[in-house]
Length: 294
Image (cartoon, rainbow, N blue to C red; front, side):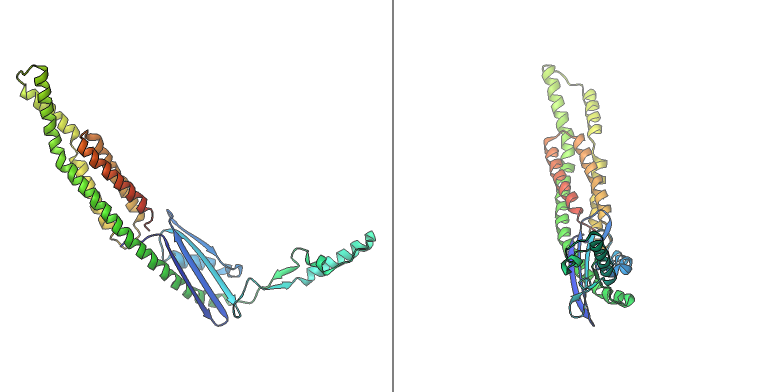
């Protein structure tokens, strides 16, 4: 069955002195786009993480946040060290400047800590291959939660889409049943009009039948009705698929809209026009909903 593109998954785990937290949120998007936020120290495995995510989803914007803490929750991005070589260099330059200009100001701790890069982030030694394995397990668990939510949302979408397709089929049945009557009513109206104009004279049946035949040919919507039924059958099959069919369904709805518009243009009948309006309304809602399908 179809799956929604919207969902959320979160998992965390502690392995040794490392704690991993993975949050994944998926949103509607025409293609697959993976956004990844994680500590800079994990940059070497960014491509591996994106590949792992891409293997499990086909469409949508996937926003992923990864955190890794060390030593009982101390974030690896949170430890800083003094950049002593740089600070000493600054101090020597300040002393020289003070002597050259005969300045009286003191060189204080506050002065030294104001310089850029006086404190630098420490880079602990990390076993990246091991981290990739550990993190990959947590990522997989978060992806399971995400896909489960996408599946449940897909079930809700399926029920809504099925209901709207049934409504369209009902309106189409009304159109198909009404179409032959439109021709007969046209024949009756033309006959009555001719009699009014001729004062009740004899109607030329051959000429009348020709006019009715021309009108019937112009207003014949059999092909459009058949194609629309075929499109709806394909639509029903696609929404039962486990594959990523969102783009196929979106294209199919465009074809359904085209057929409905053609049917509407061929008939000036009030009852058929009402059915056309109903079908267009349902198709507009279908088009909006299928934007959520993977």
